[in-house]
Amino acid sequence: MDKILIRGGKPLKGSVQVRGAKNAALPLMAATILAEQACTLHNIPCLHDVFTMDKLLTSFGAKVEFTGRYMTIDPSSIDTQVASYDLVRKMRASFFVLGPMLGRFGTAKVSLPGGCAIGTRPVDIHLKGLEALGAKIAIEDGYVIATGQLTGANYSLDFPSVGATENIMMAATRAKGLTRISNAAREPEIVDLAHFLNAMGAQISGAGTDMITVVGVDALSGTEHTVMPDRIEAGTFLVAALATHGDITALDANPDHLPNFLDKLRDAGAEVEILSSGIRVKAKNGVKAVDFTTQPFPGFPTDLQAQMMSMLCVAEGTSVIRESVFENRFMQVAELVRMGASIALDGNSAIVKGVPQIAGAPVMASDLRASAALVVAGLAASKGETSIARVYHIDRGYERIEERLASLGADIERVQE
Ligand code: UD1
Image 1 (cartoon, rainbow, N blue to C red):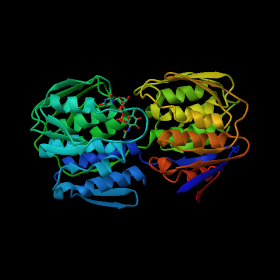
Image 2: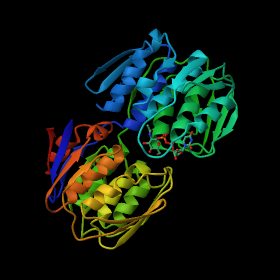
Image 3: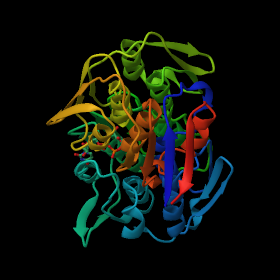
């Protein structure tokens, strides 16, 4: 197993290319199941979660070719609609295959998912949405078995779940008639997925608002699409720049994808410049405390909460962070405290009292974004060495993070235990 070693205290400087978004690439890959011919996706990131989705599609009989940054998926040879526990338990996003499978074949058997250890993360909204479209759903031996020809319907989500919005939207492209999804999630990844589906011949409007309308069509065809830039990866680099009093540009990062986050960086004392090439963040006079609450888009992204907390550990003043999207998403706190941070937990709130400095320590990654937070903390620690174990969590969502941070001047390396 690999470890990442960081000797912190060096300001990050320079430019870094943001890769294609993991959270867009995974549903896009699943959506290809709906096509009658091959689809090509450009700007696919080289990540473990992408490899898992590749294996899952291959296990259905699809032909997947992944070369460089583009992937061709030919779903015409799919001959089974069963997503096995072995693959689905590795990644919650495997559940995205349910909607497209059901939409195209009228049947799907998908294991209930595993994924990051951040709360119970049920799938009730996905299932209620598909039932509203006429699917018959049964749970047997840990599998969801969905069958039925779908018919358009009006469905209002109990909560704007990203995955449920995507699953229902994909299924509805092949339902008979009109589907209206209200209280839909508005994340940019949903807009990216809708663009792809429309290029395949779907008729979706309203993606990016809380009301998505889908007119079902008889067939979808192969097409090409370029995956949007990863706003969470961009945000992780930008927050690391501020935490180390640096100055970096995240190339290709889109400011419209991170409105609340960029406002909070400004409140924390950063100079944020929107360039035609991306987003530049420069530390001005130190880092100040800020309060924030995670919320569905366009609010503060829950996937950047942990990294922002690491930065606020060394800010001037006390910050209050409220996590309103997931329960149990403060897995990084115990490790940050071991590095000298002062954090108290109170239910779904964390009170972070800034300290003048934190120090490197051996720490353990527990989930994807919590591990990214440990990297940010290691970079911000002004003395000692941080060694992060279980880096496979980081590799699920960040491509060779150590090489890219090293190119910005960080003293960071990956070693084999
Ligand atoms: C997606 C992202 C993840 C991000 C999250 C919130 C992908 C691959 N992952 O996850 O990185 O952190 O959005 O922005 O895109 N919920 C239910 N019932 C359901 C579905 C969700 O109660 O059927 C709850 C969840 O437990 C959670 C909240 O809704 O508390 C948000 O979850 P959701 O938006 O569905 O997240 P994911 O799509 O799993």
